[in-house]
Length: 330
Image (cartoon, rainbow, N blue to C red; front, top):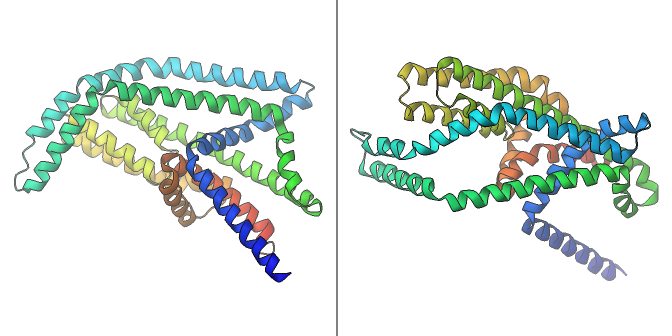
């Protein structure tokens, strides 16, 4: 009997490992499903509120989706025209920027550094003309966005019934507790998404306005980049600041403007780390900074940018599950 149990345990472990392997192979699809699930969890309270007002669930979901698309269109009409103009100008000036890098005098720099800059210049020149690759990447992004929107609508239409197949796997005596755990996970993920969107909006607007006041070209594009990269914890703001400095240097900004960019991004990040994140993000998910950094590194290593973005909400969900099922008395 013990031998049979050990064989069954080994088989279950092998099946579990095989399942993880399959999920890793389709990690891009998993990321799309998880992003859609988080967005659906964020919108679910508003759907429930409309349902309580005796609005049919289908109509409630349709109204929310239309409001979301309308808000997105209004934002796009304000941001997209200057953004397209600035990105087009950046793309047109890439050869000039490459020549500037080539002509940069390195003084006492080693020959190896010269070779690195030459290689970087060649890669930038090749990338500027690779329109097919850019088009394919854009199509892939649009396809992912459409799939996420479709999944969000489906998740919202299904509502709580979507979890019923999962609940059948849970033993009957634990289903009530499992349902409570899922509810708390949904609440925490919703809080994370709302807090993340608020942080992205604040950082994007502040950086864009600050760059405009300094007089840096492409302030709208750089502000939008700062807002988007805010979703990548720890590293996102650093990359956004480096991009702003490089654009300032490439567009012949005076030295005092480059220093101002560094001061602005450093100051905004300090305010974010010491004021905004403690008041908004940590209150929403309750994770320590060390856990956040480790989760982002692991998620980025396994699934790239999507893994880094999803690392925090998934870690928050795991924290809730561990606290209620493994360490209930802690």
